[in-house]
Image (cartoon, rainbow, N blue to C red):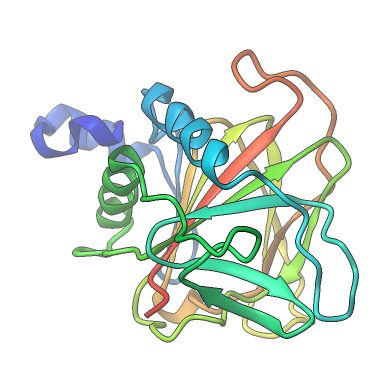
Length: 221
């Protein structure tokens, strides 16, 4: 079931939604094909990127990240020599990050509810842009003050392999294929599980070309 119809789901539609939920772990699911109507979301990405262009941030150790990124919402996640943290302004312009588009917020809230987390109120949306060959190493999302809220991650464009491990870095991650419109929601016991993206295979998506774009919604404060 798509996010735009979440408030008017019939019994049959709820049964269909349940059949598309894949369990990853405790309080962690993949909502297969949750985003049915992607145009408002892809348009929102273009609007955000026009004001805050994608860029390759630098790790505290001085290495440029292979995945390009930008942000929208009251807070944006950034990385530089001073460390990983959230900022209310874009360090490249000193302006506030673009407002989170309404289509983004609706998607995040309805997906979180479908994943078992009612009343999710994200204040940050990190937008990652992957090209073929890029990857995201196993990591924890731990720069937030509020670990009671879930992570909501939306996949667009080229398919990817999502790596979902455990609470320890040495826990062997399981591999899960993600395609355009899939949404991953994890929280509770799984909130700080290690996760990442395997090197992106080449291909061409009908709408986004040789790109994968990922929206990650978080409650940072």
